[in-house]
Each structure stands twice: as structure tokens, then as C-alpha cells.
Image (cartoon, rainbow, N blue to C red; front, side, top):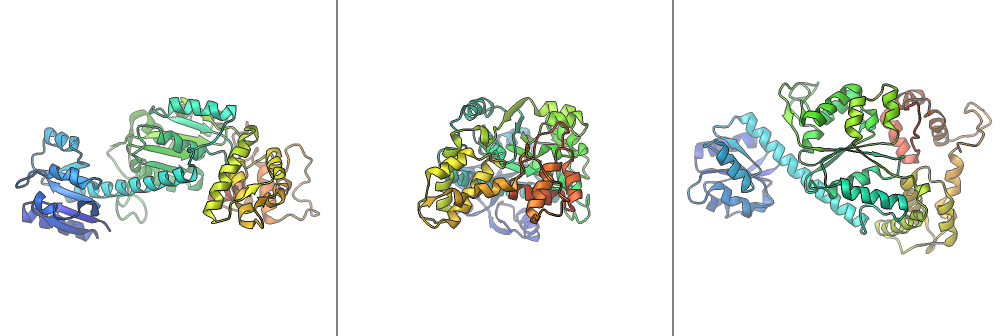
Length: 455
């Protein structure tokens, strides 16, 4: 439910619009002039709908006083000039009178949704700033400094970016950094993990649908691409997109247009696409699982995140920053690492990368008995023991002498078979959904290896 003000001097139009909005569960306040509207705290409303021509001051005179509340202008003078003038003065959009009810509701719902996304995005930016007070990403190693130099050049452009790197290296964080340093920083950043949703549902989530286009679709719904209009769309695990969805995404990149499921008319959308993949997409192209033309569109600029094991002193740098943040999050006393703990972290291979490092430190903070974190508290030896080495000899899983927990079995099965199987095949063999497979990978810090098989 949203709180909306209608500013209209004609009682019939004002009353009809009020009934329309109240039927859709919005609360409405009326005003017959700009002067009457200014008697209310305009920032308390989610949206103001005002006629352009009013007795005394015009509807556009409310825009400055209402900020940041959006103002939708109605005009009987449906000319390009009046629309352009209203938009130049800061109106969020305009509707020509007499307006169609469905058109008005679509505009209202879109503006309200964009407002919620802006507020949500502001919360996310605030959370990132609080979590990483020295910047969105940390790194003093040569590889990270080179990455930061490329980000400074790439971020201000609208070019599509492909981020590669092992699971847990911080691909979504890098996408946020690119967004925050772009001209789109005040618009939404909308993220989707393509491996977490199945094909038909993924298509609807991305492109939206019209009314009755899908079972249970009682009303039209914009997709995430429309939600990201003016901002950035981040697609993680893009290699998991079905081929049909890849074709529709290619149209977005080529023409800047999408069509909702069940729709006929294309819609213009202005988004910057940032994609990420933990494996080489060119191998999937060679295997026929990813469109070559889409790969070329995405691969204009590629940023590769190095694995944590190759970042040297960054391990200690990140560990100290994470420890400070996690102590604050859990209301813990200030803690420090023993030298032996720092040495153990430097020697660990970190198959789960930064995510694994954060999980180990968080566990140590929660279980800490004193002011110093030891190697035992980090439990790195146990983690290493449960992750089979690529060079060690392995006994088959069917060996009845091995007493494996379910998590040990899951980890070993995935690591030993992911080079030869796709994610779908792995999930089928384990008897779980692809979404469940992805969630367990995240929880257990299991990286997805790059392979020539394009798994």
C-alpha cells in the first residue's frame, strides 16, 4: 500500500482518479491547487500526481518542494513541448489527459517500484560503505592493483563487462564497485544469480510478463531488466542461461529492447549489463552450450579476479579488515590474530577464496574464548582435510571403509565429477535441484573449477 497525493482542480477527474487508486489499495489525499498541496508535508507521500495547469501556481512548482518524492504530471496539452518542459523541471513522468486507466496504473506502479528500488539500493550502498569503510574492495597485491586500475577506466563507460574468477573471489562485490563508480550510481543495481532459478521461471524473472501470459499471472509484471532501467543489471553465473534466454538477452544488448512474455510490443530499456562466470565461457561456446555472438557482446571488456591463494599479503590485509567488521557485527570484544594464525592463513590454499576466509573468521569470532584467535579456532586443518587435493590419490566413493558425513560425501562427489558433468547432471546424480546444488556450494565454499569440458 502506498500513500499518494492527487493535485487536480477539476473535482470529477480528481474523484475518478481517487477511486481508481483506492481500488488498488493505495491511500489517497486530494488537493485542488498547489497552495492546498503545500499545506501537507509532501515528503511523507510515496507519489504526487498533479495536473500541469492549476489555479495559481502550476503543478511543476511542487517538484522542488516535494523532492525526493516523485511528481507525475498530467496534462491536457499533450504536446512534446509540455512533456519535455515538465521532465526538464524534474517530473518523473507525464500522462496525457484524458488518460487510460490501465496506462495510469502502469505508470503509477512503475514509479512506486522504482522508488522502492532506489531506497533499497541506498540501503545496500550504506551497508557496503559500513562493511568496507576503506572502500568496496581491498587489495594491495600486484594483481589487485592492476584490477583497480582497469576498473577506473572501465567503470565510467556503458560497455558490457564480463567478470571471471573462482567462486568466492568477490564477483558481485566487483560489480557493485563498477556500478558505484559509474554515471549510473544513483540508479538501481539489480542482481540475479542465473543458476538459482530454472528456465521458464528465469525468463519471467528477467523479462517480465503480461497479464494471463503464465498460470496464475492475474496482472502484468515488469521483469528485473525493466527494474534496472537507467542503472545496472548484474547477471551472475551467466553460463547457466538457457539458449532461448540467451537469444533474448542478445536482443537487449543489440537493440536496447525487450518483450515481456505474452507481450507483442517491444519496450525500450536503458541498462548496463555486467555478467559474471566462474568458468571460461569460451569453453562453453566450443561445446555448443553458449551463444558465440552473445559471448562476443559480453567479452568486450573482461575483468578477472585472482584467487585468494595468489594474492600474497592481501590475505592478512583482508583477515584484519574482516575481523574488525565481524567483531562489530557480533558485539564481540576486540580480537587479534596470533602470529601462528596469520602463518596458517598464509599457508592455506583457500579453495573457497574470500568467502571461505570470512566464514573461518566468523566461526572463530563466535567461538573465541580469549582475546586472541589461534589456528585451532580457524579450523583450517579440518577444512583442508575435507577438501580432496587434486594431486592426492583418492579412493572411490563407493569404498565402504570410508566413513564420510553427508557434507563430506557431497563435497567430494562434486569436486571429483564437476569437470566431466554440467551443473544439471551433477544435481540429477545427487538427487537435488540445481538451486539446492548452488546453495550448498555457497555454504560449503566449494569452488567451480574451470574445465575444457565447459562443465
